[in-house]
Image (cartoon, rainbow, N blue to C red; front, top):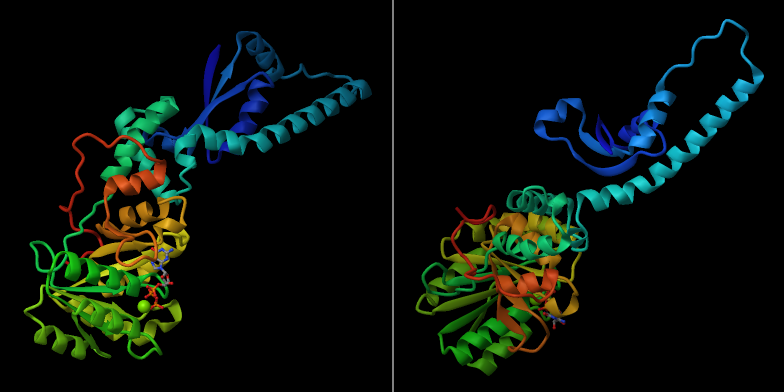
Amino acid sequence: MRLKSYFAASVESALQTASRELGEDAMLVYSRESSPEARHLGRYEVVFALPESARSAASAAARPEPASESSPSPRLDAVFLDQIGQEMKRLRKALETARPRIAENVVPRSIQDLDLPPADVEYLLGELDERLGDIRRASDAVIQRHLRSVLRAAIRTDSRIGLTEGSRQVVVLAGPPGAGKTTAIAKLAAQHALFKKRPVHIVSMDGLRIGGCEQLATLAAILGVGFTAVDTSAGLDRTVREHSGKDLILVDTAGVGPKEWPAVEDLAASLRANERVETHLTLSASAKTADLLSAVQRFEAFGPARLLFSRLDETLSCAGVWSVARQTGLPLSFVSDGQQIPENFHPATASGIIDGVVGAGENDEGAEDSVEQPGVLART
Ligand SMILES: Nc1nc2c(ncn2[C@@H]2O[C@H](COP(=O)(O)OP(=O)(O)OP(=O)(O)O)[C@@H](O)[C@H]2O)c(=O)[nH]1
Ligand SMILES: [Mg+2]
C-alpha cells in the first residue's frame, strides 16, 4: 500500500487529477486544508492509498502508447471512447460522494451535530487540534471527552448584580421585541426584593407603548417596591439620583426591532456612556443563531456588559447561547426557562449551558464559572 498526496485549489480538482493518474483502485484516505508550509502547492491536501497490485496497472495506464505510423484504427478509437466514458462515470460518482466524505473527514460527527456557525466550528477544530494533535486521528469518544472542556473554556458567566463588587447599581435590560425583558425584570425584582430583602426600585422606559409599563407598575405595588416610568435618559438620570440609596435599580426598556433603530440611537449612546449602568442584552435562546448574532451587532450601540437569555424551556439546544457568548466574549448573567414569576429564573452557569449544547455530562474537575477577561463588547 502506498500513500500519495495531491495538492489543489479544491478537493474536487485533486480528486480529478488523482483518479486520472492513479486509476480506479485508489482509495481516498482523508482530505484537509494544507499545512502552512505546503499551502503554496494548493489549498487542500487530498491523500489517496494505492494498493501494490494497482500501482503497476496505474503506471501502465499512465504510460503513453507508442506512436503509430499507420492511420488510426477504428477499433482502437472505439476502445478509447469507451474508456473515456467509463472514466467520466467514475468521476461523476466520486464527485457525488466526495462532499459528505470530505465533511466527515474534516469535521468529526460530534462537532457537526452541534449545528454551529462556521466560525465556531473552526474555533472548536483549532482548539481540539491543539489539545489532541490532529483531531482527524482521534476517535469520537476522545473528541467528546475534550469537547466539553473546550466548550466550557470559551464562555464566561457572572450573575453578580446591584451594588456588589464588580457590578453596578443600575441594571438595564435591552433587546429585541418579545425577548423577555419585562418578565425578567419582574423576576429579578421579586427575587431581590422578596427573598434577598434588598432595596430595589423599578423603572420602565417603555411608557410610550400602550400597556408598556402597567404590568411592572402592578408588580411593584404587589412587591411593595418603588416604581417610576420615564421617557428619556435625562428622566432616568433624575430617577437614579433620587433613588441613589437603593441597592438595585432595575430598568425595563422597549423592545427594539431593526426598523425602530433610529429612534433609540440617542438612548443607546447615553446608556452606554453612563458609568452607573450595566446593560444586559436580553435574547431568546429559541431564536436562530444567525438572528441572535445580528441582534448582537445592532445592540452593540448600547454597550452591553452581559447577556441574559430567556426561553431556554423552548429550545432543544443551547448552541446559539454558547455561540453568542463565545463570539461576544460577554459573560452570561441569568437564564429564564419559563413564564412563572419568579421561579423560572436562574443565575447562568457554564455547566448548565454546556449540558444544553452537548447533553448532560460530568462536570469538568476544578472548572469554575469565571469573570476575569473583558469581553469584546464590554465597556472599557
Ligand atoms: N416560555 C417562556 N416564555 C417566556 C419566557 N420569558 C418570557 N416569556 C414570555 O414571552 C412573552 C414576552 O415576554 P416579555 O417579558 O413581555 O418580553 P419583552 O422583551 O418585554 O417584550 P417587549 O417589551 O414587547 O419588547 C410573554 O408572554 C412572557 O410570558 C421564558 O423564559 N420562557
Ligand atoms: Mg416589555
